Length: 291
Image (cartoon, rainbow, N blue to C red; front, side, top):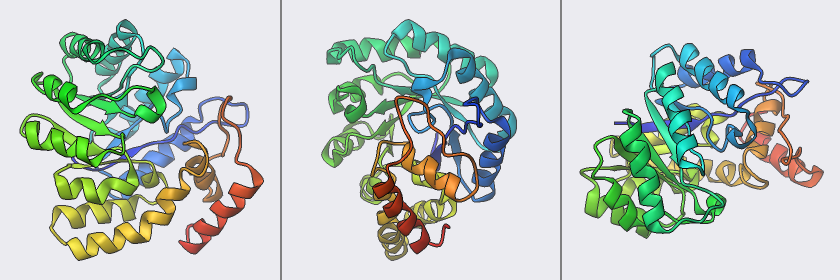
């Protein structure tokens, strides 16, 4: 259902630390102009963890308004409290989101049965296509292939964003339930190998600053132009790695600021890039003619 090059879009702030709606709308236009297939607001890269409920709803609403049905919007609505995730998800549905991105519960460290019941409850409560989000490095808990395959039985659980870094796990989901649930890469540097195994696209960090290039690589894979895809993958690899030289979204937001697209400000406990890593980032951006 949701395929191709999808961006986990940053949330810009103004000089007072408030949501910068005008810059956000311009960032969305930049994505659409460069061929991005889906916009994903309020994910990890969008600093959802430090947005208030009111801000969360406003960011999603602004995204839906600006996109204006030109491409799908998958709203990040996950929480470590199941009831809260249901409430936020219902709000996103009422605002017109096309789908939901649901990070697995963090901090609680539920069992696999707890994970299953969490996602089952949301699926049964909110009639909208849902994308599971497995990112153990952030949540402290892996959603196993077996649990994902169980959840694939729900018609509105349509995909999983796999950011476990485990190609074997992603491949097992595709092998055993690929006709029921799509796998989407959650790591830019694994897009090529995961799509070679049958994944349907990427929810990308790098696409915030290089949407045209990420889209070109995904398109090459979809068209079986593997030599072109491999070349683009290797060209982008250094940028992908640079986006994680400090905690996401600090590097990508700093990159967007250096490109003149928004301010670099992030919210505590995130802080601006350290001088040494900023110097490395600037060198890579210059090398790729982004600044």
